[in-house]
Length: 185
Image (cartoon, rainbow, N blue to C red; front, top):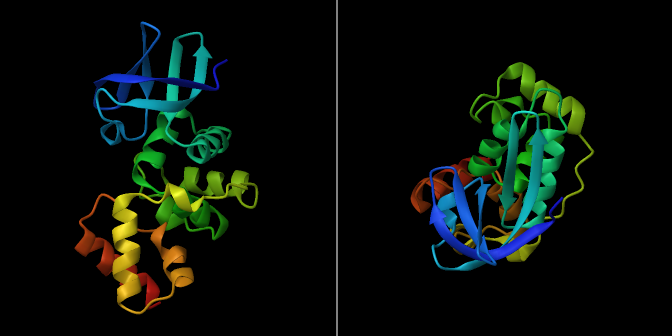
């Protein structure tokens, strides 16, 4: 079992990267392969999945994302291939918040997660996820959003409560609109 692999990204695919370490290229399935840059070195936390028809590595840039992945795959009916898109399209704080608040609507927005599976996720994980999201994990896009909302007069505490629920793939303008809707509730 591997804990992490430190190496240089040599290839980026639609759902994976190839991380070269000591002359060996590891194919690692990751939530967002385009957040990596070819030629840069990364420490990638890996989950090694071994079954009779599969031997795969699933990787994560940050330990908190890895820990949430392990919690998600412990849910009955939710395997690694379904958990990866959840982490790709949602933020750690947003996913944990949705589970703790029993927000089925938020969970069903993820690919292949229906009402029944969303309820199972909540049943199995509510109150059991103790993942602290450190401030250094805030990406540049999130930092821009926080600065914009702060300039509009909102307090950091209020902003951090809604930032995890924002779709990061939208433009900054769309993210601000979405955040304002949540802040005004």
